Image 1 (cartoon, rainbow, N blue to C red):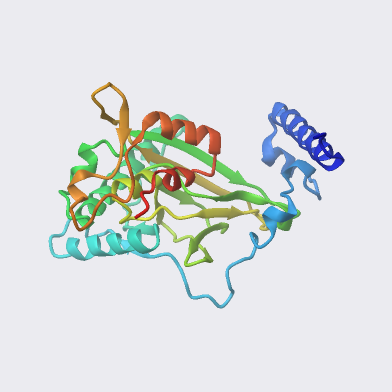
Image 2 (image 1 turned 90 degrees about the vertical axis):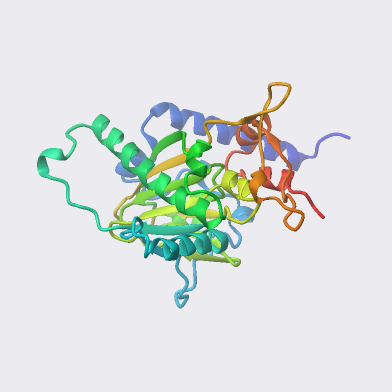
Length: 315
């Protein structure tokens, strides 16, 4: 059957959109350059289809009292306080998949402040890794495992550092900063300025994440949900287009596996940790290969949750 005119028109529109996106990318100006030029309308290729925006831009209720948990790690090395902190981390990872951590830092001496970006990146990696390892220790204890279990498994051995800037958007109701997705990682450590935009989906309601001065945002990724056999949750989150005149700036550290299990045929795979499986708590997910993981990531992009859907074992 010959294609309809509508199908042909949609194909032409999509091809033109991809061409415009490619042309824009080749300018290397980026969204910030576009914003700095003083545009009052956004280019067509940034506008989301109406069907995608329907209900997606519904902001959290102004009277909502929901907010992601905030956990004070100041006394994490105290034997008296650690069990309570472990329980707080465990409950936040089970019910929210997102939480903020905070500890009173010592102010850096002026001569210790990095002078160039390269040193700043090294410092951020060092501190973010330290925070990530501390949180993973607490998460392991929350599952009844040894505190060093996740470190031994190299759960933050692979780290990707990403910086984002979300400049002012003149038409925020037509687009998104980042569409709804989950992170295909073990955990994510996020530092942001005071401009809001991040939202977390909790019990079918979008909840604004209010930045905490001096705090870091932690969220559970798909790999940790699978490894914990569903005990910890990797939840959908998104970033709204920025209607604030001040840019929203984030620095993100994605932490992931650097060591996969090896099968008899030399393939690499992962799945729920055997220590968490019993006759009463059978596996919720099947094992998956590293190839499956990579193919899913590159084919689905932000739709990473599809891996969990694919490997879920239905009763």
